[in-house]
Image 1: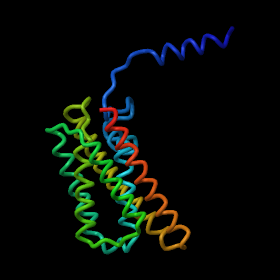
Image 2: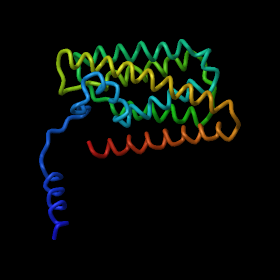
Image 3: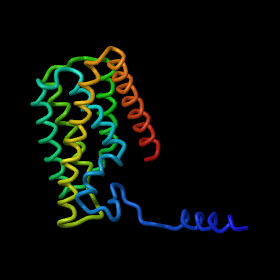
Image 4: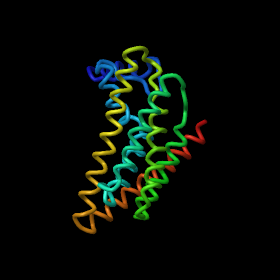
Amino acid sequence: MNYLRPILLGVIVLLAPFPSWAHSPIAGVGSFYNGLLHPVFVPAHMLLLLGVGIILGLHTPSRDKAAFACFGLASVIGLIVTIYFSTNIELVIYAVAGITGGLILANINTPLWFKSVLLGVAGLLIGLDSRQDALTGQDKTLTLIGNAISVNLLVLYAMVLANFLSKKNWQLLIGLRVAGSWISAISLLMFAFAITTK
């Protein structure tokens, strides 16, 4: 009989209505840390960040500094624009993530201009989709600053890891290509799911 109380309490908690926002902040961690954690909790952002980071790390990342600079600048521009305008571009993010996964899978060393455009588009999309509807004023600014730092660090981490693994041996290079196929497959599945639920 004692086990019924926790079950009943659990059911009541699960049935209790709470407000829900897309890109809602995490209670209790502060605005800046909400921004840092935001890309990790949005699947579309995480897929795209991993994809562009692996693309940068696969082939001579030291030559691709301009492409990474395009990503950083575009993400900051997108975050500034999102202060004033609300957009819902999750479908486009999944589509671009699917393309990045396909490029990783094909292991194509694309020219620098193409990487710069791709990373610029990716940064702009992530910035534009990072609006925090529940926050205003200084809290919103701190969240967006944390978000800018987080997305750029996540791309750097993925780039460094991909570069390290691609130079070790061919099995790890194949592992990165498998990761690209998973990024592409998950993005396409989420794209299809988002279309059917709208």
